[in-house]
Amino acid sequence: MFTSRALFLGILAALSAATCLHAQTSGTTTTTWDCCEPACGYASNLSSGAKGPVKSCNKSNGPAASGAQNACFASSGNLAFSCDKYQPIIVNNTLSYGFAGHGNTATSTCCKCYQFTWTSGAAAGKSMIVQAINAGGITDTDFDIYTPGGGVGDYNACTAQYGAPSGGWGRQYGGVTSDSQCSELPSNLQAGCHWRWQWAGGDVNEWQITYKQVNCPSQLTSISGCTPASI
Ligand SMILES: *[C@@H]1O[C@H](CO)[C@@H](O)[C@H](O)[C@H]1NC(C)=O
Ligand SMILES: *[C@@H]1O[C@H](CO)[C@@H](O)[C@H](O)[C@H]1NC(C)=O
Ligand SMILES: *[C@@H]1O[C@H](CO)[C@@H](O)[C@H](O)[C@H]1NC(C)=O
Image (cartoon, rainbow, N blue to C red; front, side):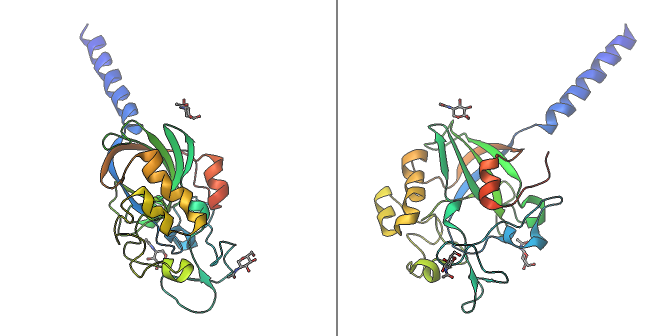
């Protein structure tokens, strides 16, 4: 009796440890679109086992020239920007794919994919699967979603790439404040700006989520050119 009870408790402990491996972590979402080469565009920043780096683009969204310098830190010569393909992709009314900055340490997150579900805000109950293409200066449990007009944040290459206002479109942090302001963006970025207001239903900043790491959908790795170690 005693032995089987010990065994039962042991099984319970093993089960709860196994459950922990797939546990959801609580976090938040914010938004960004700074037009900079993403941090995961540097091979030295990739997470262990990732094959990349993520693609960056020239000023007109073609492939960046080899050896191009991040447009957020250089102003002449061949410049590397973010790509307009890093906008959110609507799968259906409750799921979108996309790209995000995640965490402060690039080598912990670069190219990994995560699935999160909002637990607050207008998108409560909706989910995203995002690939981490940027890191640095971002809380470890935050996903800084790439959405045009999402705010340039600390660095701005959108003035160089698109002639955006010097602080970016809308607020420096958080970007445009309504769907109608998306009309201030160049036409190739407007769909991803409307995504925030029309699909997510609002600002998206500081909405709560729960998340876990998942294997990347091929739709995301084929856009970014970076594949993480599988989980
Ligand atoms: C960007 O790349 C595309 C495709 O290679 C090329 O046609 C275009 O001229 C390039 N633009 C710039 C500004 O270098
Ligand atoms: C949205 O797509 C996902 C993935 O294909 C699917 O699991 C889910 O049921 C779909 N939801 C709706 C509301 O169609
Ligand atoms: C990414 O790599 C560059 C070049 O090595 C480095 O300067 C930068 O700090 C790295 N970014 C992060 C977030 O680790």
